[in-house]
Structures are given as C-alpha cells and as structure tokens.
Image (tube, rainbow, N blue to C red; front, side):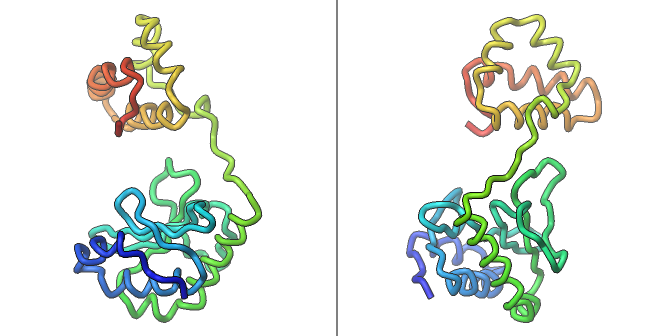
Length: 195
C-alpha cells in the first residue's frame, strides 16, 4: 500500500459524518498503488501526476469520483453521472461503510480499470461548445457588444462552457437576463465563473 499524505489529513478530520467510509475508500485506492495528493481541497489519487480519482462528500452520500469515468466499462452499472452537464467524471456513491466493504473487489476493479485507462493515454471526447445552447439573452448581448464577443471568444473552452451552462440553467428569460448582466464584467475581464 502506498503511504498516506499528511497534506490531506485535515479533510478526513473535518468530515466526521463520513469518516469511516472515507478511510475505507482511501485504503482501497492506496492499495491499488496510486499516490495521494490534495487538489481542489479534496484527496486526489494520481498516477505519475495524472489525476485518476478523488474522494468527496455530500450531505446524502460520499463518493469515489473517477476523473475519466465516462471511459470505464461499468460492468456492474454502478457509476453515476453527477449532473447532465458532467461529461467525463463518474461517481461510485456510498451511504455506509458496510456497502463499501461488501464491494471491495468491485471498487478495486474500477480503480484498476481507471489506472489502465490513464496508462493507455485515452482521452474523453468532450462536446464542442457549439453543441451547448446559447440563450437568446446572451446572443443579444454578444451582438450588441463587440467587446463582449471578443472577450468571450478569448476564454478557454471550459470557461465558455461554464457560462453557457449557467445562463441556460435558468428557466425564466428574466433570470437568464439577470445572470448575463451579472457576469458581463467577469467575462469582459477575461475571467471564468470561479476565478
């Protein structure tokens, strides 16, 4: 088993509700030979500095998230796509430690398959940003403001996608318009939603 990384200890100490489950998943992942790092404030397990999987918690469950989970065969049908807009990642979700212990062989098999995918160099095929809806409210602003069109085009594809998803998620035109107005300064300054 690879050793634990002291940089992630705080994560385990702060998640009392899921501590036993997290520790068990951590052991399984480390048994598979991955290195433990702290990324995005959560334990991330890597192979030669490439992200393979990570642990995270939610109110109702804890999860082992596979960064390239969409490429896993998922023979057991256990992987969950967190949201409809999630393209690559998939989760194995758990609500108690007994469930994790009973699925040790399966969990480790999924981790080993994820490692094999990383070693092979396979990449997830992402949808092009042109496949995401551009709400009418944002299209209108782009037409009215050439500087906005230029700034938006200069953003990375991931940042563009995040804005399009954010704007499109609103059901009412009034809300979409408010979101577009709210984020205009951020876009014009070349920043993403989370920058």
